[in-house]
Amino acid sequence: MLKIEVKYRPIGWLSFTRKVDSNLPQNWADVTQKQLIAITRLYKSAISDINFLEALTGLKKGILNKLSDYERYKLMEIFEFVGDLKPFHEFIIRKISIYRKGMILYAPEGKLKGITFGQFIFADTYFANYQHSGDETDMNKFIASLYLRKDELFDEKRIQNRHPQIGKIDKNIREAIVLNYQLMHEWLALAYPLIFHTVSELTTIPSVTDGNIVLPEIQRDPNIWIKVFQNFVGDDIIHDEVWAAKPVNTIFAYMTRKYKENARSHK
Image (cartoon, rainbow, N blue to C red; front, top):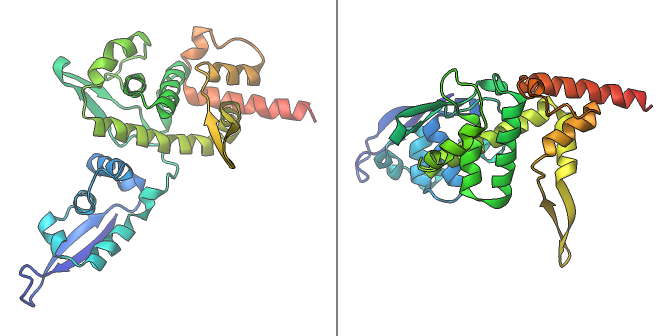
């Protein structure tokens, strides 16, 4: 966090000033749920600069409106990190409520700890589908795949049961979770580059043209993770429930090791 001191004139035509301190986030690790929602809305041009600064700085609108354009610009400069989707492995929105059922659902732990390979396959597939289609049903199913009750084991049947209720949660919250997962994807690509490089190759088809502009088309096979896993291990064992129930990081570590073994054997 960055602590700053802001000077402003309570009464514009008088020269005396007041001071107020504020703690500002400097990276994604400092961002709160409220701030993440504001950042998501900024991406969609759905929030004014004043409202964005109010959320990120904690300063009241009355104070921000008394600052000069240059001073507000310098404040905005501090938040340049929001334009860079750097790797981040924590879920900022730790819990969500399904109001009518009085149910609290919790996010996974950092670095996808506690997520099974089967759960990851469902979550990541719905996430990719939403990125491609923009269909809110895919977004709701993505969230239903990730957020569970405390100490609850993943069961794909709950996705169908819960996604309609998740769809009633404020869309700004749901879109903030999607943005958060994009940061998580950046971390996954950094932690397991061999695996996610392969997924990218299998899902990107750079063949669509519009005049002289080449537009990469993303086509996500719903079974992409099964196929990637088979490419690494050479056996159709993903259907075994034992493998689906293993921690996703254990599977990724195993796949990385198999990839390196296969690469050495083909030298």
